[in-house]
Length: 185
Image 1 (cartoon, rainbow, N blue to C red):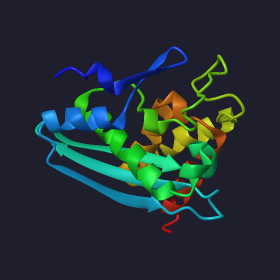
Image 2: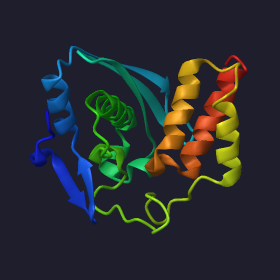
Image 3: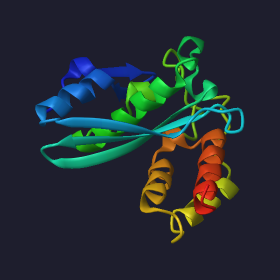
Image 4: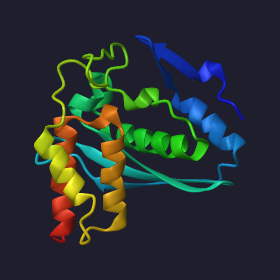
């Protein structure tokens, strides 16, 4: 079941899949369940970052994804007041990408979709601070920490695998949450 080209959008030379296209593919593949859980609510302490985990079930199996949203990762002030819904949409999009084997980044995972501009060295837009080497080293260590639950390690691995997500702000929020889980909070 190929992705219908009407669900692909090209921005600055790169193709992105629309959420509706992922949903269409999911239904073609027997999508029978979508559930989401809020992992972290937006607060002043976490930079108003909301993190949501999604689970989708198709005839191929069960797939999960993590999505986050903060005022800086959303970019659009009209959407920034809807961080929980944006994080949920991003999480479901990632889970559907895994379920449907779509390698394109979902358009909804981008910040300000009107101008995603690459700085040439990564997929992170200009003006957004990339994850530091120290943050990356810390996350790699946490991803193998035996005291963390597997779902936390999976979330870290997923973050490290996606070039678009590797911002300093997101890395800090993920490190903080992993350490809280490790400490039993």
